[in-house]
Length: 179
Image 1: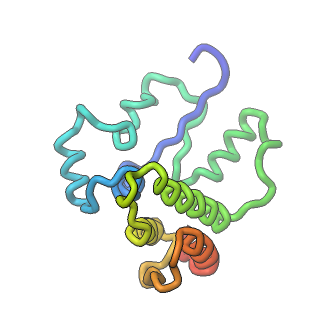
Image 2: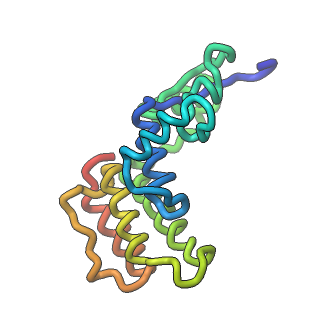
C-alpha cells in the first residue's frame, strides 16, 4: 500500500465457516441445504478452487504476508480492536459513547428478520412460506446464541410477518443468553 494506514480483520476459521453456513445456507436468501455435514463436505471437495469468498481462507483474499497492515484485528475482539484502530489512526472521536452487546444483537436480528421477510416480494408468488422462514430464522438465532436453544418458536403467536417481527425483537431483548 502506497499511502495511508491499513488494517484488516480476520476470524477464527471454524467460526467463519459456521457463520457462512448460517448466513448462506440456513437463511432463505441462499437456501441450498440444511445439513452442516453436507456443507463441510462441499468445502473440502471444492478446496482450494471454486471457493466463495465467504469461506475462502483469509490469506487468499487479503494476504497478510504480502501486505504490511498497520493492525490486524480479530472478529472475536472486534469492539476492542476497532477502538484501538480508531485511536491509533487519530479517529478516537468516532468511538460511540454508548451501546450494548444486546442492543447490537437486537439490531442485527431486526435487520435479518426484515431482510428475510422482505424477500417475499422477490420470490415467486406462492413459494414463500412465512412459517418456514420464521423457523429458519429462529434456528439461526439459536445457533448464534441470541435465543436460548430451549426456547421453542412460538408459532401460535405468529399470524403475520409484522407480528413475528415485533414479537421476536421483544422476546430477544429479555431472553438473550450469549452475546
